[in-house]
Image 1 (cartoon, rainbow, N blue to C red):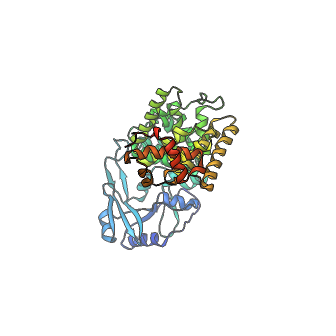
Image 2 (image 1 turned 90 degrees about the vertical axis):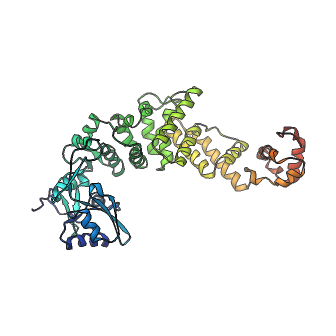
Image 3 (image 1 turned 60 degrees about the vertical axis):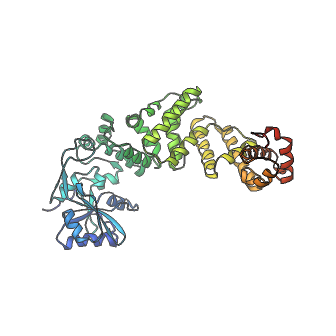
Length: 447
């Protein structure tokens, strides 16, 4: 049966030698085979190709027989991963999907000989493109036109597509953010009518959320996610975003802050995740209530399976973002002793972003942050001591004064605090003199 192309012009994309070879092997054994999905979309847009997906009339068993190195990664859905010349391909048999009773996966699939049926089951028109060994793009649903017009449009009825798989709602928003597209009217309205994500695992939500967070269009995406109630469908903690004024600021509302902080922050996950989560932490100035809000945010991160290092970094940024007072050297050295250089850089960066996004007149605050940054750089450049290992005295020398091992921690703390204020006294003789003068402060007494 001839394939009727939706687009009236011919579009051709380049294929890698590995892709052409895999398609040719399938064709030479009597099977139809096409590169499909996001890799075709990306090639049409002139972007680097991501995952390489191939749709074929060959069954998984056929594919496994034809290629030496295969893994049945999604065999229940007709998918086999093929490794060819160190390049991986997800090869899936042409299929039609049954009902989606769980709102995420088809209850059953049926292999089909119809390439058209396989394309028509896909999520968005731009992802329903395909090409064979000649590189000519097959477009049955207007995907090329939608790419040209920068539209995310569902294949077929949008409401049905989202009912089948709720993940498609987040994917639509992610494509809007990463590709700088608009949501087509019916696609957008279907999300507005039913923003529920109840069928999705926390891990899948986290994965899509992260891709949105680090995209160029994160601010615009989160504005839509708030207005469509998708954000509060992810978690009730996001119900705070509104047109109420930002806490501690008379300038901006909380929703505008969210848009601005996403546009200002570098595209780094911990920074932007902190920007997303900061307002639930600052709804109150009451310390007891504030601690409870921090705990709630931390639980959100654990619940959504974020790695421990990401959780630690985000919570650090949230707890330090408003501590922007211009510090003296001793205070900065205490900070440098407590945190790593990478953590300090992240703290100052997020303080900068937060001030710019939240304050009507941030110049004074930004000047204080910049002064702290310059002071830290000067302390490092001049070699002033700020960590225990920088003290010019050994543990054995301290023990020789009559101290016992369990006292060393408090002694080092006292000496370090002293040289923070008096770096010129960081030599053994002066440190011993200072210790003798302040022996009464040493915890545990002398032996």
